[in-house]
Image (cartoon, rainbow over all chains, first blue to last red; front, side, top):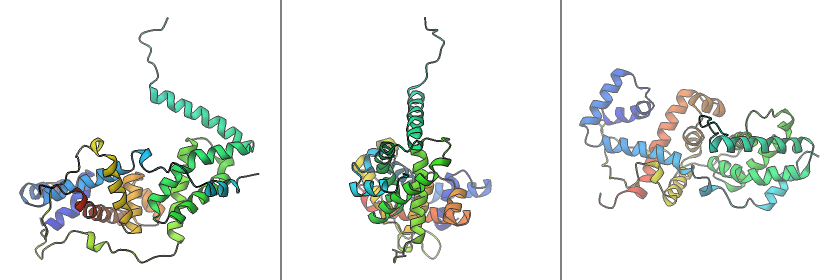
Length: 79
Length: 214
């Protein structure tokens, strides 16, 4: 297996969707390749960091929605 | 006397029951046409809705327009809302849909190519580059506010069609089929695009999280 093929299989491996024979090849490459273990760790860390980035509601929720937006919304409320 | 074997409801269950009760009261006021109830609904939910439309749309004006369109759609659908979920959950879904609709209809702008953000390989299919250690904690709970802000900024730098798939799958946690249906793509195309988006995000994060020692 090449590093390119290994990279193509990473997502399915994490999701537990890699067929048994491909999984064995994937794990053998992971054990032998000097570069892919770090790349794979960083790929997994990226997925986790992406999920974490929006987990803390106070980080990104604007303290104040512009008043003109609030008024524009209220202008179309049912009468 | 309280029976010691009686299980008390958890704090989460109590909070959920309180939220459902508050929703029922607000819904009754909305259906009665109470103007103050509409204002309460908008002021309470618009900040989180603006946060979610910003994730999908990189233009602040588009994100605000999507919130406005989401409320317009919600007001129209209010008579049919059956209370199967909290109003806030229902509005969140409508905001995601409004943002996706906006993404489809707005004028396309030239986008950064994803190709430069994907790994490079030698002719024999092995990695061309060396990878550095990262100082990003493996434990998600240890990732701090500053690091989360960097990740959000990098997600914002992804090309639209990749960012959208990553947001819907990894952040909104829609499954592949639902994401495909919302975006008018095949499930296989969603999987390929998500994988490329994650790899591109890794490249964007790399300079920020390289360990000083490596």
